[in-house]
Image (cartoon, rainbow, N blue to C red; front, side, top):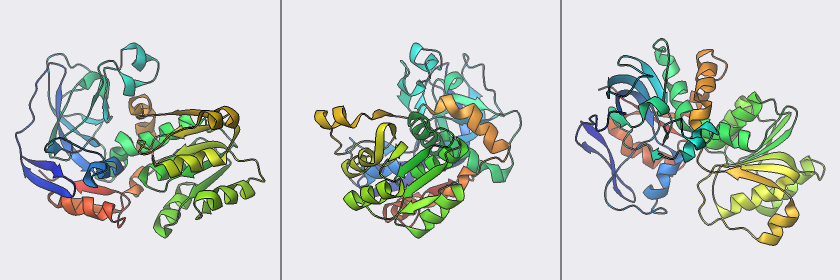
Amino acid sequence: MYATVMHGPGDVRFEQVADPKIEKPTDAIIKLSATCICGSDLWPYRGISTQEGPAHMGHEYCGIVVEVGSEVHSVRPGQFVVGSFCISDNTCPHCSFGFQSSCMQREFMTGAQAPYARVPLADGTLVGTDDLPDADMIPHMLAVSDVLGTGWYAADAAQVRAGGTVVVVGDGAVGLMGVLAASQMGAGRIITMSRHAPRQQLAREFGATDIVVERGEEGIARIMDLTKGIGADSVLECVGLGESMEQAMGVCRPGGTIGYVGVPHGVSFDGQQLFFKQQRMLGGPAPVRRFLPDLMDRVLADAIQPGKVFDLVLPIEQVAEGYKAMDERRAIKTLLRVDA
């Protein structure tokens, strides 16, 4: 088959690779209904994160099971499934504690920007539906696999509660999903930091009540003014840069909580600052598997439409253009159609 391979910064190719196959009895092979490009894929694309040799790309996926190993019992061939970007057995002590993204058998999904993919630990990673969803549901179900699950975790980690004040730092796909999550959790006020009109419009649609365009100290001052000097109860840090974390800490009230899901690049902390800020912090790779059943049910009930975050749709053969469009900020998030 043909699949997406990154050979180095800026060098993404759709080229022939070996078909995936069952390697362990706990594996499943799925036929992708759709896949997409993640913001985290841009780190190696831009040369910010290093990689050794060509890498098979893609970790967001949904599709139809075509084959299962002998020890797979929770999903079956012909069933539609959604899986997490973190592979987990969903039974170890960390999984049972709700942190499947720190599973004792954890792997990270790869190779999903392709027509077919192998999913290890299928019983613990995949969640199936009773019926095949309609075609118009596929983008929304695909979003659950990572970007919605990660935004939801940011809101959950930040302890968003009914009536609370929330600030979302970052207007990329994850930040926008954080807005949607905070709205679903009943936040009374959701302040989104964004300078881009299309993203501001989508943030409003997802539930943002205020937009702040300023950055740095000006951005912090603006939010403190909006909150009458108090700050936010919950802050979602969805970027992963030093500046964005400073922004998050600058607007979080004492006793408030920061949920951080942006992969850190250049982030450091000062012990005195942490001590006197009195802010809670929880983040890391999202335990999407914890949220999958609930989020899939919300999508199937048409209660949420997270697939609206895909503002560029391309055939998978044009994956290189999808990366370029996201890198140049011409697209929030690219969905790749899989027609094989």
